[in-house]
Length: 352
Image 1 (cartoon, rainbow, N blue to C red):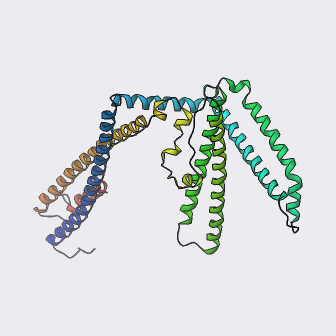
Image 2 (tube, rainbow, N blue to C red):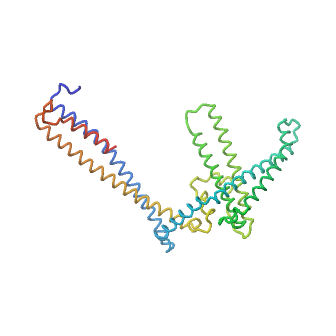
Image 3 (cartoon, rainbow, N blue to C red):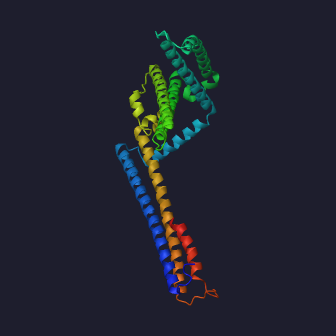
């Protein structure tokens, strides 16, 4: 024991210094963290409030109640869409149809490339592909025809979102855009793995091929999306969807408004197509989130203060006992160490 042969005063000073240093450090970290979170929540709240005030000045109907009602309607419609088994089955088969169309397009491109090749040194595999691809194309076309007939069956004619050719084309655009978004996320994930340090040459070569495959997949999904948009725009009544170029789409951030599916899933809803309503709902949710965060921070600060006062009372008790004669056998008198150690554990729980 390091304090075995020290005096009573030495032992008390040692305990006091250790506890004072530890609790000052923990207290400073906790207060600094609470202050930082409080400042950040206030800044977010002020920004959201300013957005709501600007929207209200631009249009009198953009009130808090309006945005709350629009958010409630958005949640209700999206939950209803997720619970619609017929719609989910329709979209699942539509995704399969898009896969078949992509494979058919790839087969046509590959067959045209093989037929245009004048190189006499073609491989056995290429000659075999030139013979088998026409049969594969016919099989894909038959599967597509079967799938189209299935999607037009009585089972799916009652879907509210697919009542006519224009509505069905819009669903195809949405599913193609969703697959394009998934390909974009795949590129970001590959880039994250690529940016890791300390990887060997073999791993880097593997990641390079992995990244190339992800970019090729993104190009394929973009071509499918562009094709679906052009088909939708060609159907009467005329209503155009914008399709950015491949380079522009590739440079878009994952948080860009382009990736939102609301305008494609609910084109008649204000929360999905009206920009002011979209911004207002986001600001409304941000303001509500900040209010909840501020309430949580206030509860944490109150709890810290209560525990701090309780710990301070323990220190006062130690100070009172230190003025008495300390009995090493603890006959009728509590040991200061027995009081200090629980106080240290309390301080750790409070300030960590």
